[in-house]
Image 1 (cartoon, rainbow, N blue to C red):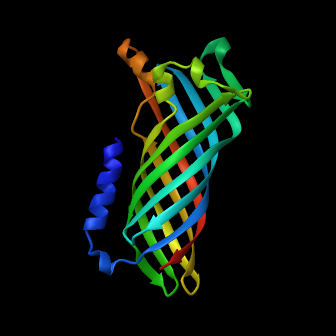
Image 2: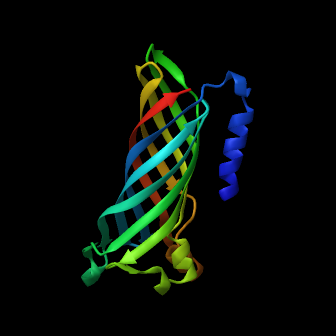
Image 3: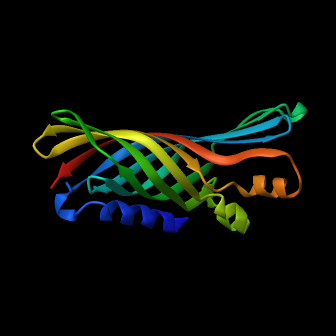
Length: 216
């Protein structure tokens, strides 16, 4: 899956002569709400988390590549439905997660006003977990290899963004994206392998970002 990111970047850069591109760079803050829903027969389990992110980006007009870090905020909420006495909602405020992000998003800008460019976004974002702690202690040492892999996410991303000129070469850049994790978690895979009628197990996210950039 990692190779897909570099393919997106290569194709986007080769599609247009470099001399014809507008280059810019900047940074943004982001907020993401993530859901992972698993359904087995009538039993439904939902896990939800929120992340705050700090990201830097380089923009070559038709492609935006980014690096960043995001942090779990507000704990982990798990909800179980139609599970008899096990039904209910639990909250875990002792787990902390830190991820490193790599993203490559293709874009096609449309000028809709003198100072505003609007564009659709499509591409890949990968979150690599660099720290998982429970109550301040390293939790990875107690996880299986499959559980460690579950901490990494490979998102297919679609969305929309804009560049709004503030003054000269300085602009603000809001965006909204939806991401679908291409990798199903190990618990869902194991249940399916055992013959269970299981649906879901792919993490989804809705993310909003606001940043500032400078055109070269």
